[in-house]
Amino acid sequence: MLVLAAVPEISAARLQRAVGHRFQFLPVATWTGTLDAILSAPLDMAVLDPALEDTPRAQEIERICVLFPSLPLVLYTKLTPDVVPVLLQLGRVGVREVVVAGHDDHPQRLSDVLVNEGAHALSRQLIEEIGDLLVHCPGQLRWAIETIVREPAAFHTVQDLAERARMDRRTCARWFTKAHLPPPSVVLMVFRVAYAHRLLQDPGYTVENVATKLGYAKARSFAQNVKEVFGMTPGELRVSLTPDEAIQIVRERFFQRPAAQPARHLAIVS
Image (cartoon, rainbow, N blue to C red; front, side):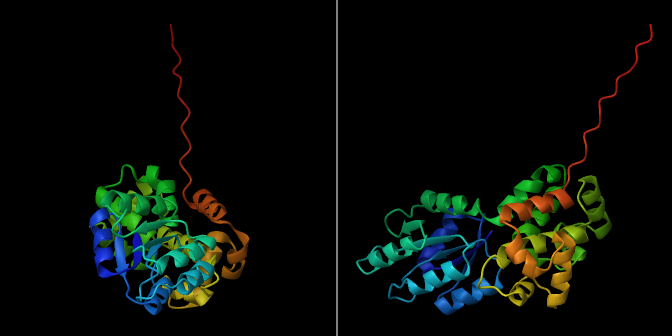
């Protein structure tokens, strides 16, 4: 999972030590850099310090809450007299998870907070939806498929996927068939579009922003893929489906489990 770390370097280091390789962190040092990262990177959550630029402020985080409400937020900051009113103000706009540096930021607490917030992320939900289909796939292929879900812009071709799984394209395709998955090219498209649905829920993203963020050279190509997956335009998708409804459509259209074979009864001849 990719986590934006808009916190001081020492806090970012504590976050990384607490969770090891379970999360990747994208560090930024300014509020401008924070907004740029949200617009451009496939983030699963953000850890923010209201005092990122020294003086504690709520304005930038409130703006993120308004423009990108689907992005889970965790505040990680030192408790000072100037920070307290900012935390109260952010609590009123719905920010609930706060970790106080030097007080309750021991490794287990940091790990628990990130894991709990990450459990609500779309990528985790999608991985859980298809987990049983991946049980018998080689470990490298499972890891590559899960990476597609977490970082949908990182893979542009089936060759990219096969190389990440350390196998050739033909072998990769055979494993997909064996696991009752759609062809690799379809899976790549579906996961990119499923991720796009989450982004389109946020008013801070335009359709063009989302297309660019997910690696599409043209918004028209993105719109065609949205039509193939959900049967509607990006504009319609933005207002028509809840996250749960979108996941249900993806599951029913592309990840149906094979029907159980009826038991065969042998006639006993006496």
